[in-house]
Length: 236
Image (cartoon, rainbow, N blue to C red; front, side, top):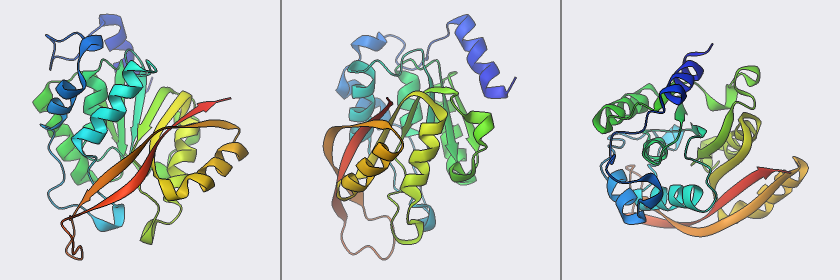
């Protein structure tokens, strides 16, 4: 059995719950409490431009996860994948909300080292991570293995044109149930056409303003607001 599946099995048998925030029942955790928790997650010190490493802000991450958990019940006791997990803000949030196991996937070793440090800091037993290129994942190994896939993928601009769709295609292949993702609102029509082609139901849950901080030297403004869609994809 693969290491992460074995870990999920062991956690399920022991019914082990996250230790951080253990005094707050998962169902009753408030949005502000979740956001406060995610504010403690360490992020990139030197983000890499070619990988479009922009951390998911705690407020957006909390809103995403709170909705997934409370509106759709797609986190607690579920096997969750976080594609392009970076430093792990979405994975940490999913684990805190009671995921059976959340597995983060990222190509960047440096990001995963920060992720690992965050896991130790939060004392979360229900997280694992895999270093890999999400666009080159072996479909036979991960196909239909996860209940829920969450991600904030590269927007597919500049050097990464089309990568957002590659991430989405991979996520849909990995999920048995649903995929939750952020995409630029300007690409909505294109994504809807792809969803129709793939026979997947697409629902825009919320329209958000993604506050993109000035992370690179060429950025002239302190931050830029980008309109993004928070989308739920489900199998028809």
